[in-house]
Amino acid sequence: MNDDAPDAGVVITAASSLTDFQPLNAAEAKVVAELRSGDFERLGDGLRPEWDDPARIVRAEFIRFLILGGDEGSRLHEKGLRLSGARVTGKLDLEGCRIPRDIGLKDCRFDAPPVLRSAIIDNLFLDGSALPGFQADGLEARGGLSLRGAVVTGEVRLRGARIGGNFEADGATIDAPDEVAFDADGLEARGGVLLRGSDIRGGINLSGARLDADVNAVGARIERPGGVALNCDGIAARGDLALRGATIAGEVRVVGADFGGDFDCTSATLAQPGGYALRLNRATIDGAFFLRQGASVQGILDLTATVIGAIDDDQASWPQTGELLLNRCRYGAFIGGPVDAASRLDWLARQVPERWKEDFWPQPYEQLSTVLREMGHDEDATAVLIAKERLQRRARRARAKNRALRFALAVIDGVLAVTLRYGRKPLYALVWLMIFWAVGVIVFELGERYSALKPNSAVVLRSLEWTMCNLEQTDSRFMPTAGQVIAGRALPGQTQLACFLSQPEASSYPEFNPWMFSLDALLPVMEIGQKEYWRPDPSKPKGTFILNYYYLQSVVGWALSLLAVAGFSGLVKSK
Image 1 (tube, one colour):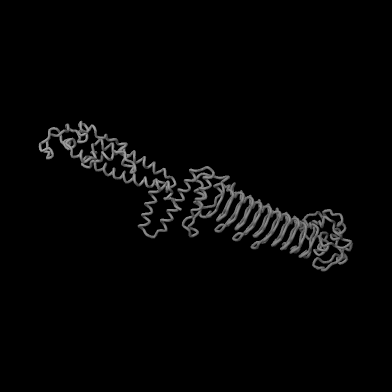
Image 2 (tube, one colour; image 1 turned 90 degrees about the vertical axis):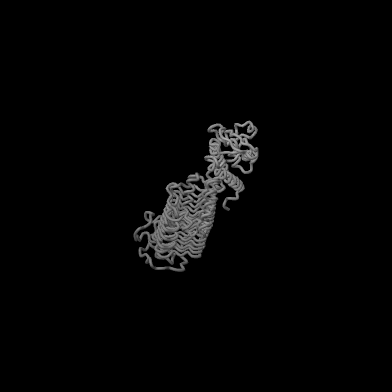
């Protein structure tokens, strides 16, 4: 073979035969000699060359000639082209070409970005290769496209490409700071996008992609601080979005997306301080959303209007107060993390509607209550609704511009909070009724002890049995009704009530019962008969206090009865 190889900068065009590339250099001659074997051809040690080695230089136009079929003396094996350890000089331009065989250029170093725009190929393997970029917008691959372990110092472009298998860039390094390092807008693939363990400096754009499998960036590192690091807007994937253990500096944007599997942020670090760390808006996640095991969200976690099958999280992974958005988010269950009301209310409290010029969002509380109730945590569900009522009413009071109206609302809300828990626990009214009943028993028994009660009958009050008991037996009084002076009936130190009850004429009068009298005064719809025969006497010691309490208990009874009815009917609940 002639040792005078053509200069690497020479571009040979429209080559139709192997003679157009003569004289071949040593590496090219070796490739031609092994073409028909179909073996994986290695130049040197087969590893990616790090220096200029004349024994490894292969012209891009020569590779293109072979890929497109060569001539009679340089036909490819049916397995296609397999070459590793080459230094590819010039531009490998396959734009618009139809290539019926696999292309394997592994561990090669390219001087210029390979161009496969609108090309039709089978499989393309660039594993371990070093490329200054890769341009394949509109590419159609019947199989897969692999850049595993590749080092790319420019953009990888696959906008509108169609792939019959996976796009694989596991362990790859793509370095295009301040740009979209991997642009696959509108990509269609029967497989998925695999970026496991990759290191990408620059953004990833998968917006509008249609995938039959996962977007898998487990353990990846993606850096685009201040910008969109991972854009999955409008993506439709039948599998997962897996970010387990990933470290992403920049916004993860998933708006209007649809994933048939899980969204897994287990142990992931998502960082965009002062901005959106994860913007999962109006998306549908059929599986679960995982945020656990040391996951960190430094920035806003926005789940607005997203539908999620289930949530598996832990408290340590929740974002800071003011950096959580859950309004109109719907989810089916908690499959991990706390399910008690106190913890989940702390979760909801990390929302700060005022930051977004809103006063309150009721839907997150209603959604949480529904989920807890469906999981069998009825008491926790009710506690969430009570917290929702309290916050919603506080927001309503804050909106009231009239001070008097705010005060009136505060009083009403306070009464409803204490008596009915805002209508969420109407049985509380019965508890209060029982409390007032018991207090009434004590008060009215005190009234009986101090004889601060009197018959509630005009006939009895005008009778001699009652009036003359107000005088001791040593005293007397002229009674106009009898027309004579009549002596008193009370024994020394005996009260009027005790004297009256000791009269034979009073034996037929209903006996005073403090239990029934308290109940009769408290329940307006019941007629036990005690109020009909007895009432407090303000002229006696403690009588004024007992009479005032009697009025209070009657009013409280009416109020609690009405509140209980309103509570059970749902009239006091916020809509």
